[in-house]
Length: 249
Image 1 (cartoon, helix red, strand yellow):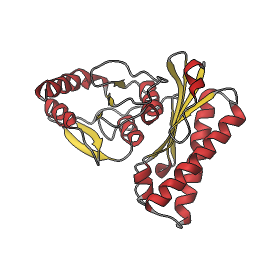
Image 2: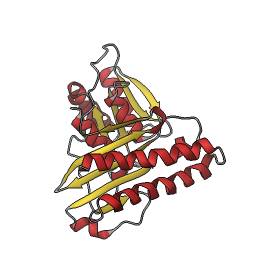
Image 3: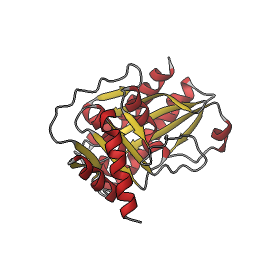
């Protein structure tokens, strides 16, 4: 299998066990989320061990392996992105992330959206639907929408749309359900690596809120802010974010 095929297969394997756990109906809430995290991690780890045994895995649900900092190939994984949403049956807004980092870049990735029975990958890249016109829509966290998102929305007269997991919000831009996703605070490399790779492959802009590149496989797992949007909106959104940051100082 190619690297993209491995990423997609790993994402599908985790999606299958997560869907199965939910359908059993034995668990709910935090207990379901904890069981899902563990089961999805096992599914992805097993598949990567079978097909890419020499690569290092950097996962939210595993002890950080320091070998990744000197490795040529590192899989950046979030086995269950949106654990809270997953535990709130039947919420759909959760995902599975599997990305491959090599030589400083994200080179292959897949995001599974089990509630939609869909996997988005970097190859073939998804086609972003044409803009429907009208008022732009910006996805934000449903539990902790950042203040800076409101200032970015004001710059475009945009509507804020609360959603669950980071992967769901990024792929909502890819799927054309919203036009942008703005996030600040409380995010890690595994939260964004796979969806950012898919978004970039689809031709979307994906950067930090200061406009700088998103850099992965860094010693500190934190990567706390993110903008994913249609390219034509990037300049105005970043200007709105800058204006909001200056006012808050």
